[in-house]
Image (cartoon, rainbow, N blue to C red; front, top):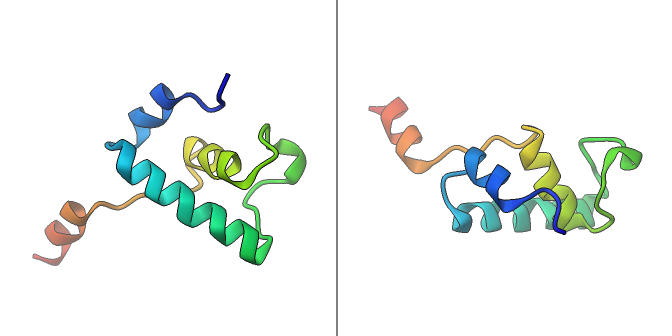
Length: 74
């Protein structure tokens, strides 16, 4: 079973495509910088992509859509 579940993540993120994009960027950052936002023992996943999804679920990654940026600048 995949953790965290896609259903929980889609309550946080509006689109599967945005979720994939954010998770891929974050997992590449983890690989390049070896920087994690939680202790390594707190992650349930061993791979960076799963860990990035866990960070999204725990609210450690904020996703700002273009619509919200446009509203603030107007």
